[in-house]
Image 1: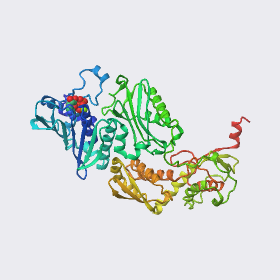
Image 2: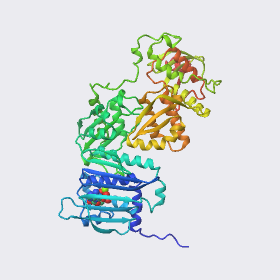
Image 3: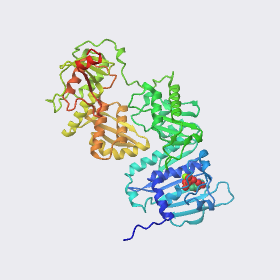
Image 4: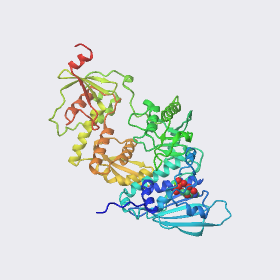
Length: 581
Ligand code: ADP
Ligand code: MG
């Protein structure tokens, strides 16, 4: 029997393995090529993507940067070939996006790559063309070429079929490419970006010194007036960029863009700091729109953490986060934040009149209660499990903080019910039941038009069947614009375009790929959106109805996310808390 034979891998194999780290998907190619263009000092970068029905077939990135002479062009594809660092100490000072010198070698090992380049301002008129397929020998030739560099990548993963199989749907891959271009453009307002897909221009930013212009080019000009500048400095960090007024919040993180020293990054800690800065101006489940630029001494930020360099370790994270909290507070402080409609009703302590016990009908209750009533009416149908009653009889005593219903249970316990969680549970069970009945959709009298960002528009196509399953009807209406003509019946009369928009964009982002998980995610969201909110004042009658409906659910004690709906304190527990025993 022979044992395994140890052998040294050839360079081609090494590069293919390394490629697995650097080049995950078409968007990673775009990212590396765009970064190289920026490092080359380009201020005009054109990304062109060609697709067939299932795959990205060609990625072409053209820049007007410094270009390369013939010797450099041939070297660029060699493993660990970089012009950016020479020794390890340089890492502390590196200001460029790339420095490992492995991107081009990796890409060329798993694709068919053609480089055409000519140095800027040189005497040579001829440019150089280098072609490498699957890490083979480079073919070098002289060609006529404009100044700058163009890289064309075809047949990505042609020789690594396993990786090709892992690619997600075409729309998902395109959405990732959009994401890369958006993030890079926002980290580099001084560069004009174009993204062209099958001949159609999808993104166009213009060279500017004001990040706000770039944001507006990407996400629409209405954003422009809604952004508040950040300007704060506390060693070791300088915080700049823009954040939105609280009313412009979103249900997801999609429009939170962060960069450190012009490098796009993601950092959950920084997102938390942003939210902390807003404090109670933002509900717990909302995120601002934010374009935050951080400038720090490169010696204090380790950029060499992950090959794709998106997650950065911050050596002084605590101080940086504190600076962000202060920056956001300072920006919001004393500003008129009410540029957009205040969706929430006045808090309970500002109610025009105290709530009389046993109000019997909504007619004589203040108009303020009408919305709660509409929401509650959505769940007035008897549930199938109507005979079940897992809750004890509860006599409602009142509402606290427009959020909690306080009652007395037949077993002499004190009960506190979270009105939002309780209503979510009811809506969730009802939605599940309606799905089983096949009754799920209602037409809108006036269709709601939603214009998606380019990235979202790609995702929508993927999510359409699932959304339709849930009772949405969406039709293409124009470039990136859809008309929503029907919504799930469980949403009731929720025709507020902002709500429909939020819901749809959250759904297309978070919906898992497997149908069961997706159904579940959608039902929960729908339930959450339709439910009475914390802060909604309720009449006594409304509270009674809510508790009644909760009692008829199959799992009255938790909301669909698993949080409690009811807390109860028995006389013994109360006695213990008051130390009466
Ligand atoms: P890195 O960016 O980490 O140095 P790459 O493999 O991405 O490694 O690129 C290798 C080298 O090729 C770069 O250091 C640079 O000298 C050169 N190069 C790559 N792309 C361009 C470009 N668009 N313009 C000019 N030079 C480039
Ligand atoms: Mg590079």
